[in-house]
Image 1 (cartoon, helix red, strand yellow):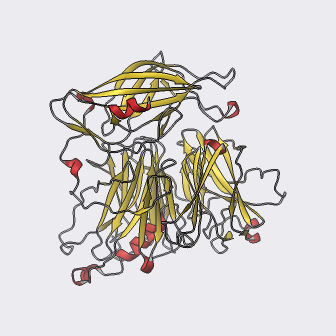
Image 2 (cartoon, one colour):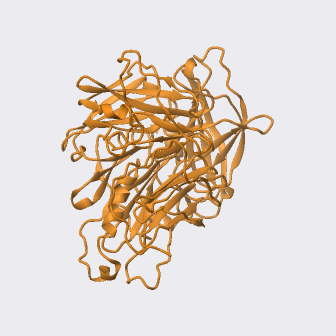
Image 3 (cartoon, helix red, strand yellow):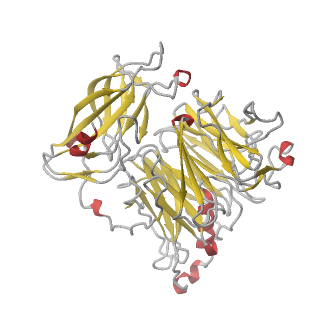
Length: 579
C-alpha cells in the first residue's frame, strides 16, 4: 500500500541531493487537496542533476503545483527541455503533478537516464534515452526505502549501472542494486552490507569495485573512504598514505573519487596552519591501488583554517560528530586530470582554482558574479570552461548558476518551458544520412590533430547537437581501450557545443587529437586500424580505416594508453581555422 504522506526534510550527505531534498520538502508544503487554491509562488527552485560526458542537466520544481521539468545543455549557454512525458492520475487536481525529477546519469551526450520521485509514495520512476532526451524508454523504477528516503543513480558505462535506496527512520530500508543490461533489469546486491556506513555516496569503477564517501562539510566522518571489491556486499575502510611533509598523525578529509574507465583520482584535504593543503591520489587499475600525484603545483593551498574533530579518529561511522569545522573548500572533478576548487566566501569574494594535467598547471580567478558561497553548495564541472553551481536562497529554495568561460562570468540558469524548443522542428541527423570522411591530419610537438568532414547526404536539412563518440578497433576486430575526453587537447581547441544545422548536401565537421609516443620512452601503446564513430543523437555507427596509436598521461610513470580528445560538431570553416 502506498504512503500518501509527503517526504519530510532531513539531513542529507549525497553529492547532488542536497538541492533535491530541499525541493521535495517544498513540494510537500502544500497538501495536494489544497494546491488548486494555493497562492502562486514567485520562486521556482532550479537545481543541478548531473554534469559529465559532454552534457549538463538541471531541473526545476514548482512547490505549489508539484510539477518538475528537466533541461539539458551541451554548451552551458543554450538549454533544451527534455522532460519525459508522465501520466497524471485523474484524481490529481488540474495543473498539478505527482513526480519530481531527482537524479540523472549520462554516459554520452546521447545516452542517459532520469530518475523521478513519486511524491505520494516511496516509488521511483526511471526513464532511459538513446537520443539525448528527444525520446524516452520506460524502465523498472525502484524505491526510496521510506517516505523520507531517497534514491540515487549512476552508470559506469552504457550497460553497468547502480542505484542506491536510502530509507530513513525505524521503518527505513536500504538496498544497493546493479544492472548489467543498461537498466532493463536490476538485481539487489545487498540489503545489509557489512562494515558499510549509511548515507554515503557510492561511486563504482566497474561491476565489482566501488567506493563510498561523504562530502567534506557533512556530518558523516569523511576522514577516509569505504571500498568494496565484491559489488557492495562487503566493505572496508580505506585510508591512503599521508604525504611525507605532514605529521605522522595528520588526518585529512577525503573527497569523492572520480573515474574515467580504470583511471581515477581522489582529493584529500589536510589542515596545515591557517590553510588547507589539497593533495590528489591517482589510480590506473580502477581503485585497487592508489599513488600520490606529484606535480609542480601540488599540493593546492586554499586559505581558511580547517579543523578535524579528534573524535572521528575512533568513530568510523558517526552521524553525531561533524568531521570538520571551518571554511571547507568546494572540490569537483571535470575528469581525473582536471579539477575545480572553490574557495568559498561572501558575496563577490569566491575564488576559483582549476587544476589541469594532473597538477602540472593551475589557474586562479576571483569571481565577482556569485552571491555568498559559504552555505552548502553543489558544484559540477564538464571541463576547464563549463560548470554549474547550485546555491541555497531564502525560504528553502535553490537557484543554479552557469559559466561557459571558466568562471569569469556566472549567470542564473533560465530553463525553457516544455515544448518551446526550436530543435523539435528540425530532425536530428540520422547516421544513415551522413557520410563521414577524414578531412585533414597533422602532427605538431608530439601531438596528432585531425578533423573529420560530416556531409548530409539526405534530402532535407537536419541538425547535430553535441559531441560524437569514438571507439578504436584493432587489426583483428577487437576493441582497443579508448578514453574519450569531450573537450580540449593540445591540438583540439576548447569549443562549447552548440546546435549545428546541416542543409542537404552541406557539411559540418569535428576535430580529434591525441598525444603520440614522443616523450614516453620505450613504452608501447596498442595500435588501432579502424575508428568507429557515433554521431550525436544516434546509436548507429560508421567505421573509417585509420591507423592510430594514442598515448596519454602526464609522464611515463602515469602512462595512459588510448586518450583521445574530441570536439563537438562545428562548421567546416571552424575546423579548418584551427587545423
